[in-house]
Length: 250
Image 1 (cartoon, rainbow, N blue to C red):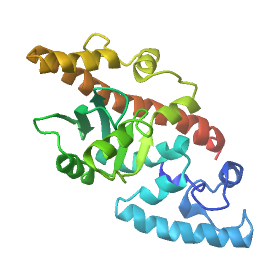
Image 2 (cartoon, rainbow, N blue to C red; image 1 turned 90 degrees about the horizontal axis):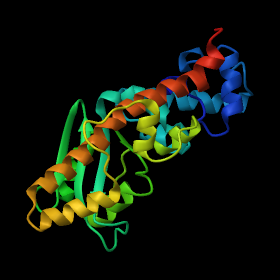
Image 3 (spheres, helix red, strand yellow; image 1 turned 90 degrees about the vertical axis):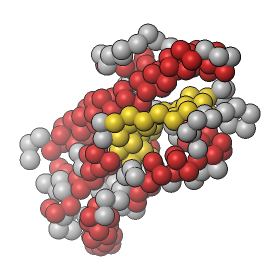
């Protein structure tokens, strides 16, 4: 499902109105003629569509992400999937005011990069990486990763953001990232490690164990890489549940 199939970012259009548009054959912006809704709402939708095409031509989905509920921002993904940045961090604890970020991994365009504290992990480096992306994808990043990065590196992360935890809940996938991976059959190439283990590994590295850092980095990279197949599965399922189930007879 693409943004061009969506009408709920328009003020005054909820899921029921959007569904009614789809049921009446208006499944794409190009099919909207104003006949299904009242004149005031029709004018609003037409303005949204005109401006929306301009945003999409620029590859900018921020206006749509801001207007969509967190559980519906997955709709932005297909438009900019090649420029989506999957991100995960490891830290020394749960408080951004008292703890540090130890590693940050970003996966984009089939390539995974990892930055390490006291080596190459800086606010400027993260800002440059995010500027090259059209969409940020995390798991629980809205409450954890993004606020942590903003506090520790004085960053303003204003990239359109899909926190996978919310669309996962929408299709009944609860629990942490690794539990959901197991439920869906997404494999990892390394033993299961917890967040507490990640803290321990960092302290072992600080004490001189370079192998501990290697394990920590691979754990962080696995979290980040595995979000991409999870995103694909979630968007496919939501496409079927939300859109295809309504438009199948069109």
